[in-house]
Image (cartoon, rainbow, N blue to C red; front, side, top):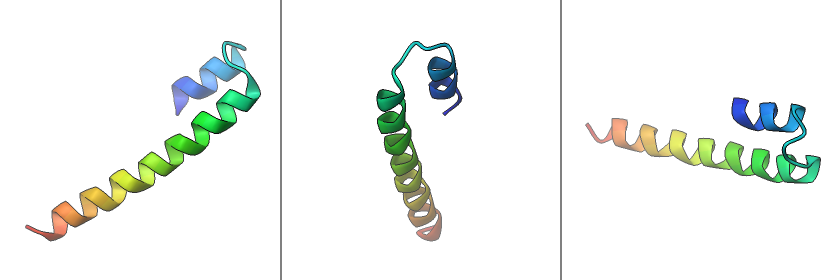
Length: 43
């Protein structure tokens, strides 16, 4: 996430691209959290 913010602030990516990538990042974080929870519960 930090790298996306930095790229946006330095105007290395357009705002629209930042928004898309940020949404995808949040979704992937959610999926990883669920995966970790499932794997931990299976122990």
